[in-house]
Length: 243
Image 1: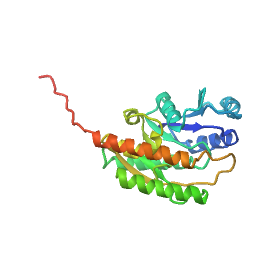
Image 2: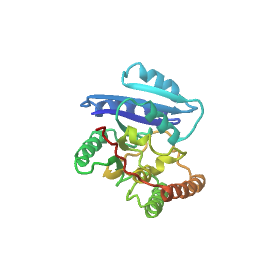
Image 3: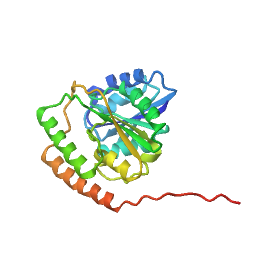
Image 4: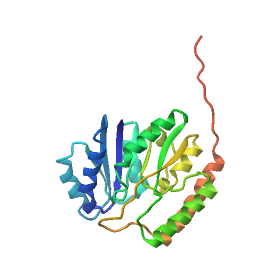
């Protein structure tokens, strides 16, 4: 397994060291790996903690956005910078368990033997540790998204995903695209499967989850992705051999 783990963070100073340690332990059997943290314009001690962590972790790379650009921009920056063909993304709050990454990789390799166009294994938090409001909002959002986009993904918002780097970079990039990755993969002709993963309570820091502002942005984004789906045209390309 040669894999790049991309972790977008904004004001997560207290969660950085423990999560890096967990990632390194989880990747113990990997042939090669790197950890890419994207500091998305943090205003706390995130930058300082990451700089200190680089002294003890040779696998850690750090990229900083001078101002906050959002989670999708941070993920896109990390994937573009990555050097390995497989990408795993993790939320930086510690609620995703890095120990699930090798499992998602094995699922990908096994399923890819029968699904040649498999591009992504999406994590599915079937048992979540979040507030009642966040659980309700996520359940409604996932139901609406799945119904309108037909992505057959029960938990599109899960930050833990494993996918092919080159295929991700072929997808249309826009703000908040990370919420619609399964639908975008299907639109491009790839396949997605969902796999149950662990979910943990937040141990420190504050959730960046919004309410009305996120709802409005989500509706606009959903309409945009529906427009993209309606304009998609898949082509089968064959190069002719020289005789």
